[in-house]
Length: 72
Image 1: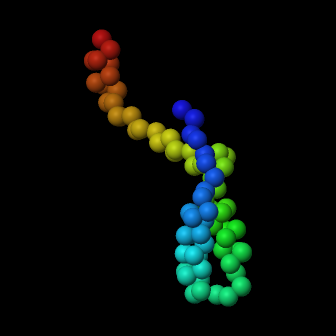
Image 2: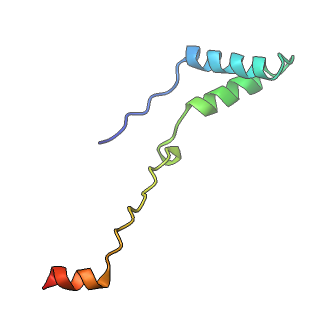
């Protein structure tokens, strides 16, 4: 299955940039920085999508004496 990646909307960027601004104490003169950071945060490139971790399931330990009985 191929994921479809769309560019973030202006409204999405504005909301996140505003959150960054508020989180930083509403500093003056950083609007462009917040906008660029929000854009980068919301723009996901395929290489940046996290890959699910493969977790090995431990196998049950078999008593060698019982294994001989099972194979016989």
